[in-house]
Image (cartoon, rainbow, N blue to C red; front, side, top):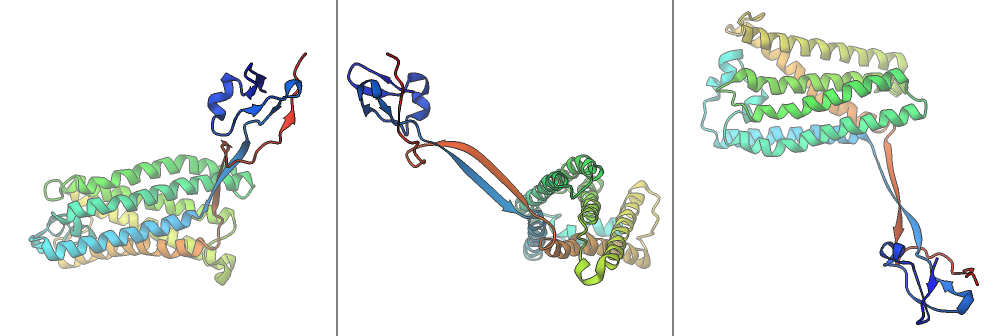
Length: 313
């Protein structure tokens, strides 16, 4: 409401003047039938719609870029004999990690890796939000939602710990260096389990349209069992070596070849196939929509109608 000042102008009270400065202006006084142009109040809504699987796909693409950059830098600038690396001396073979184990490849990879990490973190967070939206629409069970509430923060913490591979030099402390990659292995396995159960609950398993529900379920279970087994074997081989009681003798050509096969199988199951399913599922499962609505005050807002105010006699 306005009030009439002696100089014949209608003003907005001081208590609201600061909030409406952009849209209020003095109006000639019309006596007891004073008209006020009220502060124009409208609601501005911001909506963001996207699919969590797009973030996961981009995270894998960013990881591939990091590997490619590290490979290029290592092969062109690193002066270390990779056949004598800490990985080769300990496990009998080099894996993809050797490409960011030595300067300057390690420092450059550390600059590129945050893109991968943040995209994965964003994926886990938006999949968490999607679980709530799906539960609100009765697409998933309360049991699944509770599992997501427990597993998602654990996964995000593990993803944050992966960066330790750039902090601890593998030549000085290979165990500490390896723990970062172990955190990534566990995080991706947890993501695989959450994705399987989500796809089961919403009845949209990967390739279900092609294989049918039974075929898609068997394929998903086969992948999940294989990924779990390979992850377990990889961790068993690595940590048994650090413990001094290796389950595989990597000092022999056959033992090193067997350990390397497990490593390659993990890369295929953990870093290649998920990108394929992320691409496929982004067209099948639901995305999420985040909307924010807030009052907006300003000259561009829709103005309230001017109406006569009742001024007491």
